[in-house]
Figure 1 (cartoon, rainbow, N blue to C red):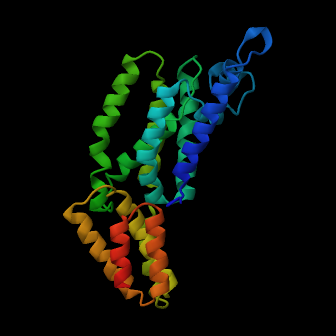
Figure 2: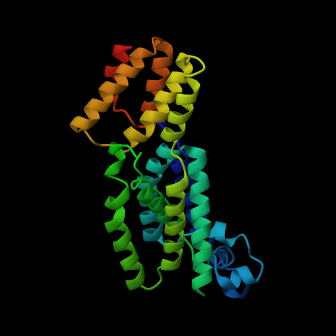
Length: 282
């Protein structure tokens, strides 16, 4: 049984499938003995040469191509770690938009500052880092997100940029392009909890929320909070779970409360023990 569905997992699956298909195509030869894998890289990777010859789709397709096993493993691990946080904070639709905007921006930056072919999703991943970095600098960012945003990411940014300048074959132009665009997005884009809080203040002046509307508010509030506390069994998490229990009890509707719990559980934000314990209080 799949306990959660997310845009992050979908992106990872697509990247892995593309990598396996391209690797399989490497077993076959095309015109002049060139492997189909190399042809896909040339016609799918982004470069100044490709863009000048009309291959305007390459800033997008380059995001789904990877050079070797270590390349895709590292990128997918980073996407899994960062993607769930950004998706939880902004919602799946905005997250996907940010992913492709920062990734394509990084691809264009690579083409602008380098003549080499560039492939890989790292420009989009650096975009996610940029989003979380400036998110942590904003005053309204919840305390629970502070440890995974803002200046706490600075060592990761500096180390990766240093490696990019030190190791041949790494496109720092793509990384920096994605990072800068992500930082701009993170500063101006409103997280889901901020949008919800604003709409809630306006709405309560008109009429009291229904249990269904209150349950949506609970999900918007706790998805990013619990995402930021995965595998964390600290006292702070215990307090958050207690607050969640109180808000679920205030719904006064067992069926809706159970749906909220199930939604959090299938996203892997509640353990089996927490899920069962909270369900007993409904």
